Length: 480
Image 1 (cartoon, rainbow, N blue to C red):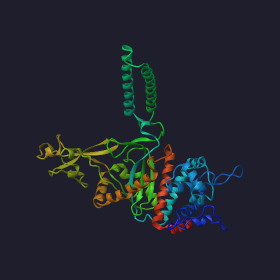
Image 2 (cartoon, one colour):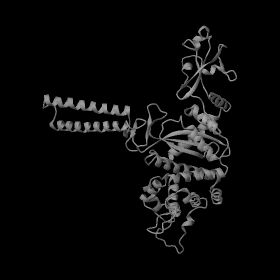
Image 3 (cartoon, rainbow, N blue to C red):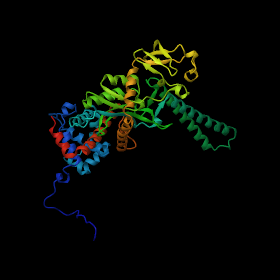
Image 4 (cartoon, rainbow, N blue to C red):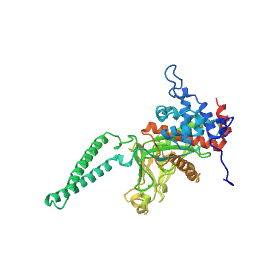
């Protein structure tokens, strides 16, 4: 048709067919994937069938299957069935696999059987970024986010949820019995078909109650008093919105603040971050190879022993203290109003009196030193200080570390904004890529493999944006 760009006749033959390679740009992402995977040592990484068997039917090269997965996760195609379809029609994937098209079962089995090796591939790319000096600043932002599992909320039970569900079903049985009693008193009040339906409903509901009671018996054997029927490792976790929650996993990441590359990550089924800081920060320190590392984290990570472990490992933690002071909420002096003298091991209170060390005790696994002043009973400021006779001050034996962290935070007021701008954008990107269902696999080991593929795809795309495809491929080919 005139004045429109016209296509070619589909039935037109050409004398010299175009090469498949001609359709791929020189800086295409698939060329980067091809170079990266071809440079890997699959035997050293621990992939199954890294060496072909001498007899039997030939297997697919693990490099081919890994290329399919990296391409898939880079383009938001995580399903093995969708990858099977794409391998047959997607020109880039046809080029990448050299016209091979494995079936979905072969693709799915590769991810299932090579979890640890795939996780090592993710670490290999982080090491490549380290060799390219992309972690030069030595500052990472640490955070965790809840990702949905395959398990539906209705298939996850805690003691309270189970009891509430059983009570709800029993109330339903009572209503059905009341209606049956009415039918017995007056046969014309309820139709015979309705009576049969009610009896059937009662049998089904009682069966559901027995099934839930059996779930309750299984729950007693779990360490956290929680059970998931679809994915046994998924756990119900609270989220930021009041009254909301998600059944899933807690994904921890350490993200480089300069280039927003994911330096280290971990997947857990623990619903809080209090005991995660030291572990993820050590992973980040090992990945960057830095002698000293600065880790920025939010209030959810504030835990004394975790911060102490970071300091001992050469990691400077910057974590704000939670605002949970009961005294401050009651309008009384906060602990910050009492000045500690390290040389004399004593506190000076707002009234200028000295609170001396009295005794030490073990509370919650921590050694606490207790201080108070003998002047408290007659102090004119006592109504603003305590409701008791003496204002007692507790100090952890390693609290000097917490004082250092507080000074570090006050010296870098922009640290928390930098943390938020760095890591929360990464989580938003990952969740957008993964879609509403997030994880597709079940159990913690397989979910960790799936997350490693997501992180690898994210880092690969970031590295291409930072360096460009051609320089990145040159760096991959030049590594030893």
